[in-house]
Length: 237
Image (cartoon, rainbow, N blue to C red; front, side):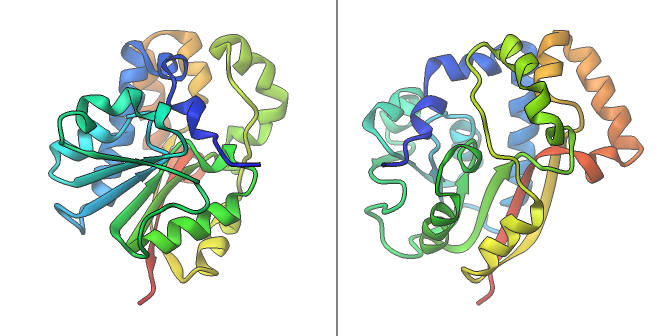
């Protein structure tokens, strides 16, 4: 079966999970961390793989990167048309495991909201590695976090987010080993939140959310147990 997990994350329904002040803050944290991880390649060519969610497009364009959004279906262009329709970014669609793009065509390849939802995540990593000249940045829910209880807490998450779906939780070592097999080594890591995003949404207070996360970060909990993790890997050669 063809991988098409990005169709859901490119939908308006998915975008509503990041509506309001708390959702905006989530995306600001993600964008700041991403731009920091991309600092070594200013103005580079970036492929936002499965990026029809549009969570990074504006920030990347404004930072001066040459952005291409790649998706499994033309429908995934809806939320990024603001940029692709005006020529500030490009859009290409095709098979997620066999993109119609040349080897090493992009300085950096990003893949957010994707690895936990595909069936063949190792094969997906292989395709990301084929397309990246220098580096890849992915996000994943870490097992060494409250995600260890994801099965038990799924009912609560479903009640808060309504249309949530099961996802794969990863050990950091298995992600890095999969990239190492493709010639990439870890060079940057940014855990984002200590407390579950669903809990922050349920509380409904961005002030409380900021305070809880700042306190947890100050005592080292985010570095040790934060999730989702943004991981940067770089090509060995």
